[in-house]
Length: 176
Image (cartoon, rainbow, N blue to C red; front, side, top):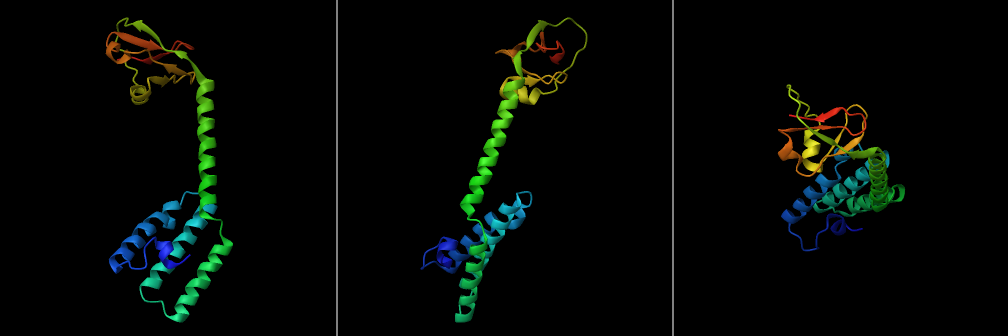
């Protein structure tokens, strides 16, 4: 790839456009952004950042004949020893998809039923753990048996006069 292709600019790009393209790519591929990623992804990010730095150095004035050859040699050596970026991204996406499927399967296996609603019996009860999840998904996890309990439609409006219990272990899961 040429320095133009690496930075994604045309041959008639102005210095400001070159610098802007370099900064965008440097933010994307900087190795510090991939500190928690697998080793292959970190290595690929370092390789891509090296390509971006070499291309930018080419435009900054190190394009004399010896500098140009050293940039080309460095780029060729890195390309020969590295996994193509799209493969690394594909593997990472597949791993994330597998993890998502495992989470979904776990949720399916623990999905036990609907929460039981009963009128308030008096006393000062307060069980709001998991309220954030309940507000967005209409489900809440029982803290005792770890089952997922689906709340009925309109549960928010009825919360002042109704308590909600787990359908598995009968534990109070939501009350105000």
